[in-house]
Each structure stands twice: as structure tokens, then as C-alpha cells.
Length: 188
Image (tube, rainbow, N blue to C red):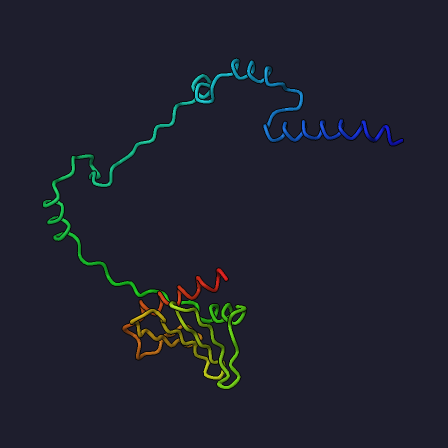
């Protein structure tokens, strides 16, 4: 019995390796490399096959950014700049959308690095040189401070995403800081 196992095992291993190499090479088990070379020589290339079948060749046109809509040559830089200044009015300042503070607080509470402070009944998370955050369930406020050197940015949000009225001028900076926190919470 042992004699048969000794001769069968190398054969099984050889067949398995052959099948795996055929799968890796994406060729049929019955094809041999010589047959494959002959079949490739007989078949036209994919781009030739499309032309022979009567399919039109796809044409891609590249239009430079400085070309005008009517195809005329672009004007020199001084003429373009003066035309832009006369025709274009400054775009209205779009208010950045309020961040989803309730969703961020949920991620914040689920984060393994968020700590509960029993003395003042708050949750806190500190990431050195980036930010320090604090959530107070009693006051329903979410406070985030920048920990970058020289920055004194401190943003206090309510759970509905409203920024403290005293910090209305810092809306863009506060939203950027909240986005950094959200990216951190998503990646950890």
C-alpha cells in the first residue's frame, strides 16, 4: 500500500502544478505553447480585426484649455486677462455646508482612543500636533481645538452642526479642522 502512495504523490503534484501554471498563463490545458504561437499568427491583431469587420475607428479629439469655443487661435495673455476682468464678476462666496456633527460624534464615541473623563463627565480625544476634542453629553456641545503650534483655533459646535455665534468668522477654518478629525476617525 505504501508503495502505491509513494508513486502517486509525485504524479498528483506534477498534474496540480501543470493545471495551476495553465490557469496562471490563462491558456487551456490542451493548448501547448507551439499551438498557441500558430493560433496567434493566424488571428489578426485586435485593432486589425475591428477594421476588417467594418467598424469605424474611434477618433479622440484633444482640445487645449486655452482654445476658444469657435476654434480661433487664443489671444495673447494681456488681452485675455483684460477680457476676463471686464466680463467676469466675482463669484458669490458659497457658504460651506455645515458638517454632520451628530455623525462625527457617533464615530468619535465609537473610536477606541476616545476617553471618558468621569470628573467633568466628558469624552475626549487628543491627537498631538493636530487637534484636541471634547464632547459634553450634558451640554450637548462638541468642542475641537487645533493643536498646531501658533494656532489658537477653538471651535464649539452644537449637535445640529451650528457653530458658536462668537466664532462665525472662523467657519471655514473650523470646518476644515472638523474634516481633519473626520478623516482621522474614518482611518482609525
